[in-house]
Amino acid sequence: MSNPSLLILPGDGIGPEVMAEVRRIIDWYGDKRGLAFDVSEDLVGGAAYDAHGTPLHDDTMAKAQEVDAVLLGAVGGPKYDVLDFSVKPERGLLRLRKEMDLYSNLRPAQCFDALADFSSLKKDVVAGLDIMIVRELTSGVYFGEPRGIFEEGNERVGINTQRYTESEIDRVARSAFELAMRRGKKVCSMEKANVMESGILWREVVTEVGKDYPEVELSHMYADAGAMQLCRWPKQFDVIVTDNLFGDLLSDAAAMLTGSLGMLPSASLGAPMENGRPKALYEPVHGSAPDIAGQGKANPIACILSFAMALRYSFDQGAEAERLEKAIETVLADGVRTADLLGEEGVTPVSTSGMGDAILAALDASL
Ligand code: NAD
Ligand code: IPM
Ligand code: MN
Image (cartoon, rainbow, N blue to C red; front, side):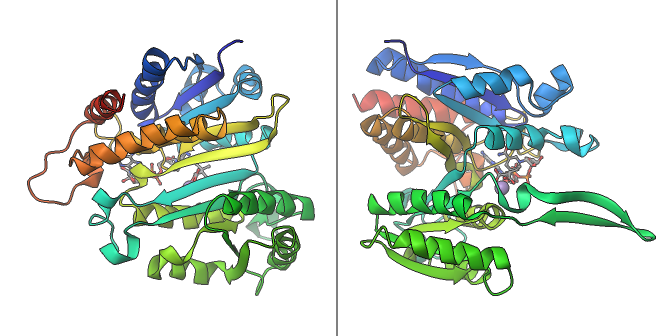
């Protein structure tokens, strides 16, 4: 049997820096665990624009459709702010999500014990936190029509449309309930049914899907109140399911509960392919961090944890995913920190590759 295939798209800013550490972890699995991958690498975002005048070349899109999983670093940066909207780096990522039909975006927020003191919230509030945000990723206001900037009388009007079909809500809700069955058996659905018709439909469909999962306790919250509850007492949640835009905001907020945006991985999953595996793209939640790019300061953990999610959700290697997560936990417990995780006196930060070295050493020690 051939090796599973991975397409790596490092992207822009710190993307290539954090992805270099993931490449070392992938090589480790090939050398030490007999888990070899066929890895190919290509351009996305600003890097693809610089080379081809488009943030995602059609050939790259075609490759992404064929591989078992895509790993992406980050896209964007101030250099590209002046570009026309249609070729901005972010359009490359949105095209991948849309054309691969990756409707279910899993964004876990887990607080490692060693970082509980570092969260901007009190230790009690975050210690032991383990929640999963399921963000709808291929519809809603990100993609709804009509959209654009139009002339209206003597001024311009900017339009985006929040649009959800029943089947779009149904499939993402099902993925949230399936996850909840394997976790704490609770789903909280967030929308704004008090002001948006799409929210009313969202609530109705999620409630209907919930009837197929009688063991799962379903609750509903307005997304603004949900944001408040996430900060007040996040441990009340197990799985949160929400739309594309609310999910974008809520997952960045949840990231801070864990200490740093540099800690948060994600998996974007679609329908099963012929081999039974879901179409999948894995990426950190953070962006290209232009303020620290090129300085060796980026925390590679979010990207490495994204590879752990790939091991779990695309390659049936749950035990190996746990090995990698444990190695990261050990390294953090030993006090190894990149600059974004500092705050304590007397700790010297390690570089991006220094964090990679420490994680590889912990993996070796796990054998
Ligand atoms: P950002 O996530 O790039 O950075 C926000 C802050 O977090 C910065 O101070 C940054 O230094 C810090 N940070 C982020 N990741 C870090 C890491 N791994 N280690 C240490 N510190 C880290 O968000 P932004 O500044 O709003 O956006 C910058 C660019 O990235 C924009 O062009 C935006 O569109 C893009 N973006 C891309 C993605 C993606 O590719 N998935 C996600 C978000 C933003
Ligand atoms: C994210 C990012 C993206 C989004 C951008 C870069 C298109 O913020 O992955 O959270 O808004 O979805
Ligand atoms: Mn975001």
